[in-house]
Image 1 (cartoon, rainbow, N blue to C red):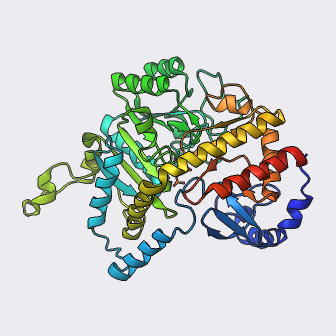
Image 2 (cartoon, rainbow, N blue to C red):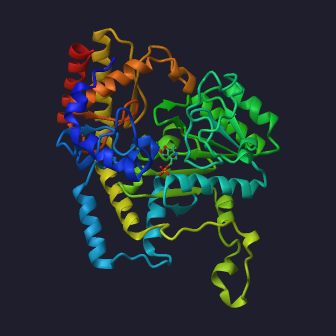
Image 3 (cartoon, rainbow, N blue to C red):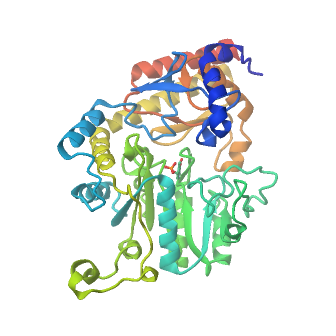
Length: 453
Ligand code: PLP
């Protein structure tokens, strides 16, 4: 097992901080996911591809705030843009519409043509919440179908079967909904269906059985950002949902802009009815973008142009006629300015990140092969995971059958080598991860695999 001595020795100040933090925050953290045993490392600075912790240790950051930082930490162009926008326009939070909302929408649509109309939210969670409400409103149906192992945000409607104990999760073709948290309103358990990922027959059977009650299927086209849907599965799912009148929502909060700039939908050539984006496009600031078919999106606003333009008619739109969507910070002007700059940076440098990710994946696969440990660097685009098995991994349950304990041990050993991802997490790359960082990462792995295991 992992000898924590070196870890404890290097991270003394983190440990001291945590002792204080647990007095004021449960577990010393503001999101449970940020915690890990024996204690999380407290970070102080982020610069380019690097993090520095409170003890002064430097790490190459592959967590990148759960994939959000594809422009790296503190990109100079992003900083410049924020300063410029603050100096020229001020905070600019008017509580009114503004020009940038339109301009960014048009730019997003050029990469995501399925998003015929868009709305902004403040996070991915709020984005999927709005998409699901739109689907409920448009179809007049209540049930939502999601896939086992897929995450769409931390609220009661979808917080089921993300990381369930496979022994309790029911048959593989018809998984049982398992609440992912204490305190979930049991009402939602009746309205959620859990589908088997990459199993078209199983999925089709469940959708057919409940077709009259299902408003939407929500999916991460690439589960957790690294287990891809097979093209046949995602195309089949598109066909079935269309035939059954079920809205198909692509949750591209993780894959958007990372699997190439046009996301998973561009890679697969499949058009969902609704899409949710987030993370990367915010360049480190909170954002969500929801978009899709015009007729569905129109549910979220005044329906008739006269309601918008001819105020003199005094038309009153009642709350029941319109779907509620609001948010003080929706479309925050400073964040939309950053988003615009993120697109500039990705247009210029995004393809290089794809190439470097391939280099790192190949380098890691070579190292593991030489060391005789079955491994695949699983994923598409600029995000992948180190999966320790040579078997095909097509869903959550396959992943549970890989060598998770060895993966965990390697991750902890890498922390001591200055490679940061939260143990058991994915690897995301940024424009700041250059050849030097990749070399250093491969050296660290070599050290761990040959000298520390
Ligand atoms: N959907 C997916 C696929 C995600 O990966 C996440 C976050 O990890 C979310 C939704 C929620 O986004 P946020 O954390 O911005 O609320």
